[in-house]
Amino acid sequence: MGYTGARGGLEAILAAEDLVRRKRDHAPATWASTEQITARFRLAVDRVTGEAGLYDEPTAADAFRQAEGDTLEASHLLRAQRSTLPRRAVSEPVDPGRLLLLDEPVSALDPANREAALELVDSLAGRDAAVLAVFHHMDAIRRLASRVVFVGDGRIARQGAPDRTLEAAA
Image (cartoon, rainbow, N blue to C red; front, side):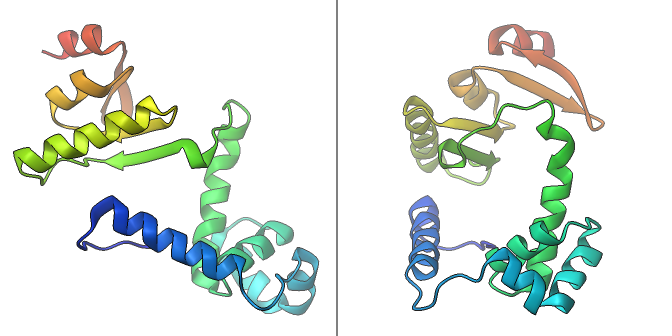
């Protein structure tokens, strides 16, 4: 699901996701099984596997179902699946309901709204949610981070505890 700038912020996004989830979960028809999709929608499954570059028909069928028949969206989902395969061998799984990804969440906010956003992020982290965020504001990093990673030229330049890592960056 894509997002665009709208009033309501995080509450509006969560409400939209909840609406989509309810519509999917309470549809009048049952979900088609992976086997049904693979057998009955051969061309769509072939298109998804070809576009995504991952030739796994059951996974392509699952992506097609998740995308509610949109082959382009299903291809994007399957590409995302393909890009995560190498990480599965070395990563611990995280409950996606407890993971929040943020990309410069305070960059375009005035001071009052920046403070409100930082308080919200801090409260979510305090409720046992994992927060992975990109910040360019050092005060936000000092305030919220339990671990800091500096990336330069596409590689990890420095990482570690906030105090030590930020001091080395100064």
